[in-house]
Image (cartoon, rainbow, N blue to C red; front, side, top):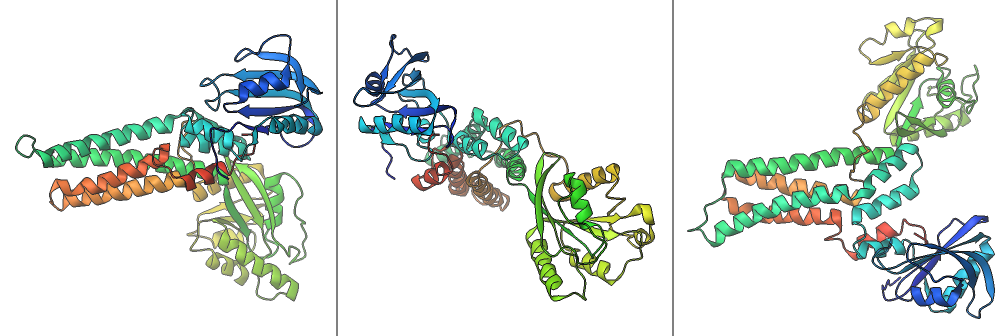
Length: 451
């Protein structure tokens, strides 16, 4: 779709279906005239004031009674004249209001077009726009809080400061090149120190951004082990409900079962799998094949072993199979003995029972340390969120690394100017100063129509 700020757009901003109210949004140069034609009230619309009146169609027929809120440019969400109609929540009423707006010259908005106009009119930066999309898509409290932290423009200010520091270095290099008799070369030691300081700030942004991505997307954890070790019982205990069938009969679990819970602020998708053993029937073998696929796709594994019995070949096979990946070894059934635990010397294990609350707490802690290194940084502060932001920082760090290597080899300082310009340009993608149309389209495609 071709977007033009010369057109006035409209859309329903509330979810589909009936509700208490429906909200219809309008933004663009025709907003005032549309409001005058389609909204009747005893009082003239005043900016930022809720006015009660009647919504009519293009022929003057009543659609509904409701509230209109007019905001004049540039003091509005989009930076343009905007109108918000709050009417009764019938889908028919809302659609009729939109139909009347279209009949009077407005255009139906594209996905995220209101926020896109806000970006283009300087009401938000690209990072804030991406944060709005994350907030709309948040599936956990921690993800919502992390997205909300990015709405204040803090990242843009940090990045602009780093770009300004790079710009100062580039100016000093250019002056030394253009006026060698008047301007001395920058001190190499100071130059290296400055570049390392900028790189350290970028690495911090990178670490916090990766933690934010973890909170938004979560991690996959495969629960694996031999039959009857207690895998399904563990899933049920973690969920606090009987989600998986538990039986003393080996091979009861034939298919993978997935459930997501919050572990220390991170959404964790647990995958209960079929027990791995050598001698299995055809159906059970199909389940074991799915177990192996789930294990290869999951980032981390919880290996459940019957700790009350000596380790058998099946337990050893699972331990060998998971040795090269992040894992937590859980020696279950401590209430029945510890013969298997004594054989697990050298393995970092959690020993206990799925029926013991303290054991479950220890498992959660061990999982956090294994899957994401334990304590997460404070995501109440602004942090990188989108993949394009993390990519931009990675490219900037690569360029700074090349510049520092050039200096360390003793080569002329002016040779690093190209790398510093590359880092400067990469950071421009974080604030939208160097963002292209393709990137904007990808970001705003994540928005709903009325946003």
